[in-house]
Length: 200
Image (tube, rainbow, N blue to C red; front, side):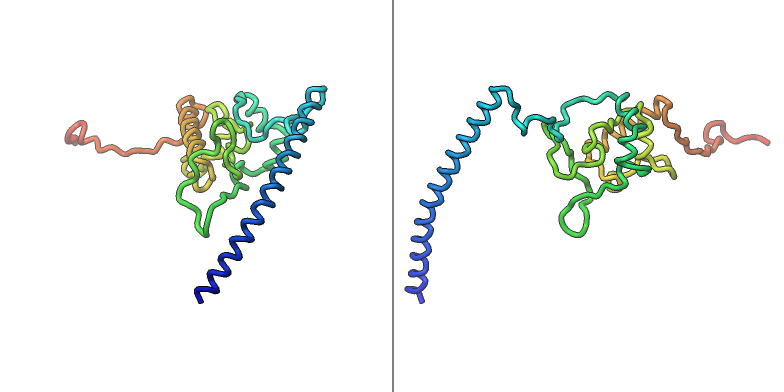
C-alpha cells in the first residue's frame, strides 16, 4: 500500500512542478499585456481624453459634507418620493447576517476612512442626503415611536451603532430646543413627606 501512495504522490508533484512553470509564464505574459494597456491609457489621457473609470464620482465616498438645509429640501423632493414612497427610510431595509438568527447588535459603523466599507450599509449611511441633525425634524420623527415617544431600537431600524448614537443625540437636542414635542410623565407626590401631616 505504501509504494502505491508514494507513486501517486511523486506523480502529482511532477505534474504540479510542470504546471507551475506554465502558469508562471502565462502570468508573466498577462502582466506584460496589462502594463502595455495601462501605458496606452495614460498616453490617451495625456492627449486629452479622460479615463472612463475615473470620469464619475465615487458612490461610496462620504467625505463631502451635505448641509442640513439640503437634506430638508431632499425630504420634500420628488427624488425622495420615488425612492422611499410613503414608507419610512428604514422600513424596506433588511440586514445581512450569517445563520438563521440576526445578531443582537448591528455593526459598529458602515463608513471607515470616508468610504462605505460594507456591501449593505444601514439606512442612514447608504443615502448621503439623510443628515441627522436636530433641525431635520421630519427625518428624526421617522425613528420615534408614536406610542411612547421613545427612539426606536437599532434592531428594528437596522441602523449601525454610530448612526444610532448620532440619532439619539439629535433627538435629545431637538427636544431641548422645543422642535419635537413629547409627553412628560405625570408623577404623583406624597406631600406628607414634604409638609408633614396635614391637620384637618
